[in-house]
Length: 210
Image 1 (cartoon, rainbow, N blue to C red):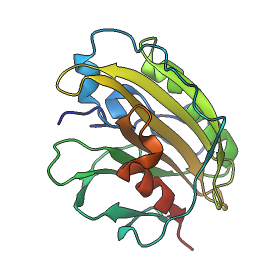
Image 2 (spheres, rainbow, N blue to C red; image 1 turned 90 degrees about the vertical axis):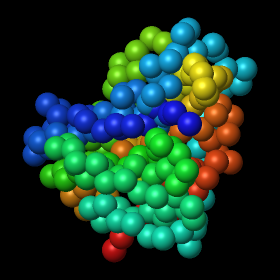
Image 3 (tube, rainbow, N blue to C red; image 1 turned 120 degrees about the horizontal axis):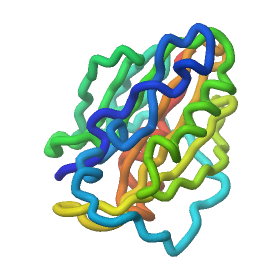
């Protein structure tokens, strides 16, 4: 299976916030299922339904082995593996089913010095630009306990073979309560399957460690 997440992270708050040396973007090269981008032949058709205005994320505990990146913890589902990626923007982890070559979830965390709300706003505001005109981007509200100022966007795009069809990437930007760290979390699934996917369980397990 080829996807489009192979490199999800590079520069969302750079040049925007003092004290943030570099930070991740949500562009296709950095999103789950990245290789699908290379095969796309036509722009994504308009979805038949609009994503919910508010995405409710219910906490999930004990869904797998625990991994932490800069005090942001998440569970790795059974049968999935974690790949560590060296990136000057921050600490990056890609998650994928063991039998898959490319990831369906990505987490990158980086240090900030205050300005948490501005950081997450900048990360989501740049999503349409990062993805370009061939993808549809809808910003959605987020109801997520323990994630102040969390923001999200859903990207819809059309994939070529071997994974033809509409796919979606959920992009979430968050910061900790002390405003010392921020993170960009991305998952990919066939359109309409984001909230029922195993990758969404990864999102539900995300929380800042004490």
